[in-house]
Length: 214
Image: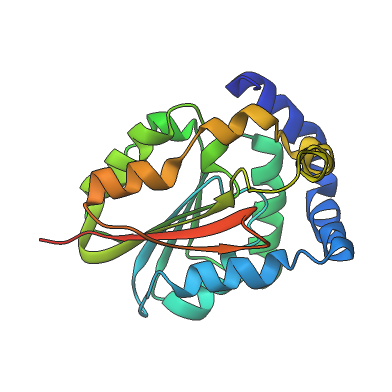
């Protein structure tokens, strides 16, 4: 399991080619963009809403946020790696997205703004050791009846050989077998008092949703 500094360095090296390498997983049937779009849709955002993304990376989700919140909305992307954020800035400039705020910060230290209308993390939260703290902070900042959505990987009930092969394929993204010990969806259930989850890709990927009630 890599440290935060090791993860930062790994993604620094991969930033320039991250989008291309992520798309290569389509070759093994993993439709990442489709899952990202589904996860964003589950936020139930409205025009003018503020959404926070933990581990925004190169901004692959921004186009889906824009479709929901529109130009009057606000998108806050938090990421540990300046090189990934550099790519995200270029993406925003290319599309003239002036409503995106990018913050270089360890997500565990990030102070969420109040009354956020949606919080999401895709393929990032499980990598952060303090994921439980982040979930607790997220719950405190969300507006009532708004959602936190997590799209991430989990240890599936596969034959050992297939699991080892999957870990090998995902190793360039800091995935290791011991990450299977982390279960953020359980902390979402404990923190919010509710959680619904659907498993995809034969249980190797999941989308979890919690609603802030009260």
